[in-house]
Length: 115
Image 1 (cartoon, rainbow, N blue to C red):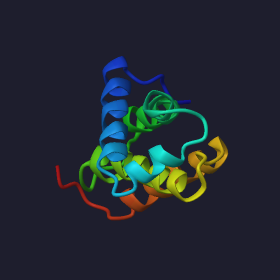
Image 2 (tube, rainbow, N blue to C red):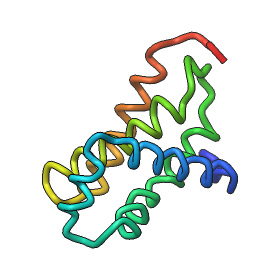
Image 3 (tube, helix red, strand yellow):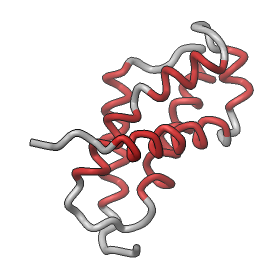
C-alpha cells in the first residue's frame, strides 16, 4: 500500500502542473474555450491531479531516468490544456488518470538513473 504524499511534494507537483499549463502553446485557446470558467477554475481543476501525481512520485521505487516533474507532471499539464483547447472541456478524470499512468510508464521505460 502506498503512503500519502508529503505536503511539499503536492505543492511542487501543483506548481509543475501550472507550468505545463501556462507554457502550453494551446493555453490562450484553451482559456478562451473553457466552458466551466476562467483561469482560476482551470488551475483548480488541473490541481485536482496533484495529490495523485505526488503520491506516485513519493512512492515510486524504480530509479528515475530523468526529471519526473519535467517529463511527467509538466507534460500532463500540457496534455490537459491541449485536450481542453480541442473540446472546450477538460477530459473526464478517469481519462486523465489513465493518461498519467501512460506518462509515468513512458518515463520509467527509459531505464537507468540519470539523477
